Length: 287
Image (cartoon, rainbow, N blue to C red):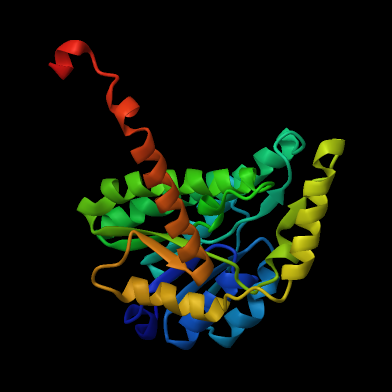
């Protein structure tokens, strides 16, 4: 049943709220007086937060790789709060390693979470947003889309796939008053590497230096990444509050630098090969 306090605030549905950015965002929103559907594979991990804000928080079991759980979680949210104003597709994981070595099982498991889980959640929530003719969708992407780091190809490709559907989605749902923002965090100081990161075991001698370097780099980064998840959460809220929210929200100096470098690199290559690129039309078209 919707209380009067909830009817005056927005309802956020956030995947992966048991830790990291999802947890930080949920905590700040509840403290600000918003309503939040706290989803987690194990809802007991978010129960304390739900009990702290009993009128505005709902803890729901959700493994985004299980379509039935996605549908049930959304139904529970609608039954409890009556609507979903903001959807945050935050749940994600990473497997790192050379493309030759990462198994098909690992690749498919990664895409089930990072892409197909998001797709399933979008399809479950969108009918309600279309009906209410309003809403805001935030798809959490990554700096990995622009860094092209060795060993990060599978994770980066899953996030690029997410970015690929986000632009089209934005154009599809704009007539219904629904907005879409791609959020691209850099390194946030969370427990992602200890909870959601897997480094494949090397079987090819040539890649041992790469795998060893990734392992060492991860160990060095734990607890030392520059991004504050609470500040990132506040930036996301600011974007949602905006009358003109961005289609793409880069979070962190590292992400901004990576995007700048990628844009420059692409422009330089396009310019260098422009004469050849333009010279592929039929002669009658050129005439």
